[in-house]
Length: 313
Image (tube, rainbow, N blue to C red; front, side, top):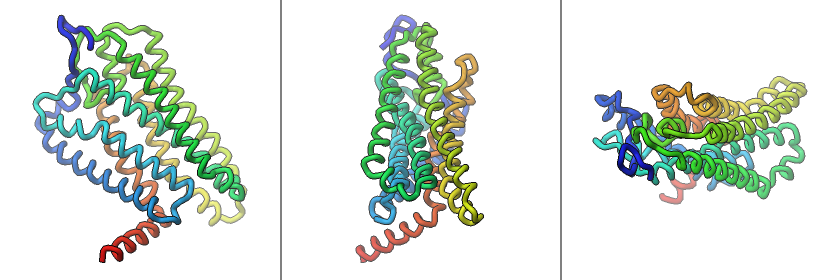
């Protein structure tokens, strides 16, 4: 807890949707429906991948981990946001804010490294198809996921510790709907340039390094695809990467806008809008981009539903 205006800061007040007071009940209904649909689609994806042996491949293993990560990510932010939309007092405790920041940073950072691992999986599948089962064995896949989680845990722990060791003297009113880095830093009255630089460099580490690894993978992938003689073969090879490229573009586009810019350029209204997109809309669209438009997954889903229906009847 920090000393603010003569009293100990025991909580922060969210002001993210205060300008839309008359629309908050409508926003609650819209966000609730989107949230339930997101949970449902991700649950369908994870259960189908687990139950259908044809999907027990590295690509779908990473996809199931991605769906689990995005479901957990929404658990951290959306339920509290929905409660606050109907509540008169939109607060979170000092410790609760720190826990929320740590958890969503852990999941978000792990997500970045997981996308890099998925890019490597596509590189091996297209550039080394004969050695794919060896290079992407179960142990390797588990190791890549564990490494992504370890990187996410380390970055989130260091960042959260730096932020919540700062003094908060001016206000406890957050112009956001959850405890993100920029709005919390804005409340800190005194913070060293060193801590701000370290946080910025950690953002670079989490975003730029995985993105560079993805770019290297796709340079090699494109080179290999161009060598395929038939246009049908080139289209089929590229179609396996298209979903990943779309998700990478959305994820890194939103994250770079939020975290890779000077604190002086911070805009609470812009950040709130972008944050809604990657906390509610991105987890909603990613499953559809990756799976529900995939013929192999659709076939597996039909088989799983048939088996479930047959066993129930």
